Figure (cartoon, rainbow, N blue to C red):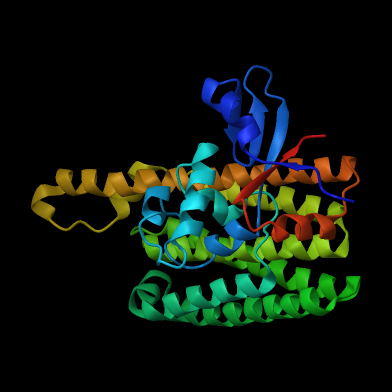
Amino acid sequence: MPIPFDVPAKYIAGLEQGNLTRIGALIKDSSSGQIVAHVQETGVLGNLAHSGLCSALSPLTAVSSVGSNIQLAQLKSMVEGLQVLQFANLGATVAGLGISCAGFAVLNNRIRKLQESLEGVAESILYAIGEMRASQVREHLAQVNFAVEEGALLEANGGGELEWHSVSQTLGRETQYYLGEVKYLLSRNEFEQESFEQFLELSCLAFKARLQAFFHMGRLDLAMGAAQKMSHDFNIVLDPVSPIALAKKLPWTNSACAEQDLRKNLEGTRLLVQSVRDSQDCLASIPELIQTLTLRKINGAEYIRSAKSNLNDPVLILEAA
C-alpha cells in the first residue's frame, strides 16, 4: 500500500510560529511535547549526504558552497529542504533522518572514500591511535566493506532472512568497533578532529546499513532493539563531550597567544559539538519512527523503497501514529 508521506511545507508555519518544534528527526507539539510527525530522508538526500563533497559534520552553509555545476541544483534543494525544518548542519545525516535511503552500493562508496581519506592522513592516524590499532582499523574496514557489498547484492537480487541476518551481525560488530575507536580518541590528551569525524561516521554508516538489513528482513522488532541500544551507547560515549574540553585538546599554533588560540579552536568545536548533538537527537528519534511503522502496520522494505524512490524532495514527513 502507498506510504502516506507529506511534504515539509505543511509544517513550516507551525515551526516558524513556535507551535511545533523539531528535535532530531521528530516534529513535536511545543506545548504538550507530543510527537506529531517524523522526518524521513529520501533517495535525494541519502545519496547526496554520502557523496563525499564535504565533511558529514559540516554546517549547511559550507555544503551549499562546494557543489559542482552538475550537483548544484540538488545541493540547493537539499540545503533549502533541511533549513525549512530548522537544521543548521549535516550532523543529522550522520545518524540518518529516519531510516537511511542511501542504498548499500552508495553506503559502500562512502565507506571506500573514508578508507581512502584515512590512508591519505596515515601519519596523523598512526599518531592518534598507534600502529597496531591502525592495522586493526584496516581489518575492520575490510569487514564492513564485505558486509555492505553483500548487502548491495542482496538488495539488487533479493535475499532471504538468513542472508540478511548474517549481514546484520557483521554490521553490528563493526558499529560497536568504530564507536569504540571514537571513545578512545576522546580519551586522549590531544584531539585529532579529522580522525574523530571519520570514525564517528563509519560507526553510523555501519549502523544505518544494519537497520536497512532488518527492514529488508521485515524484522522491525530487531530494528527497534538495535536502534535503542545504538542510541544508548552513542549517548554514553558522546554526552560528556563539550566544546571547551575539545578546544583545549586541539593543537595551538602560537603558545605566546594561548588565549587567542583557544578562542579560535572554540569556534570550530562549538560547531562540531552542535552537529554531534543533532546526530544524537536523530538516533534517539529512530525507535519512535519504528513504533509508528509497527502501529500502522507499514512493511519495512516497502517503506524504504517508497522513500528511496522520491527524487524530488530531500525529506518527507510521516504523520505519527
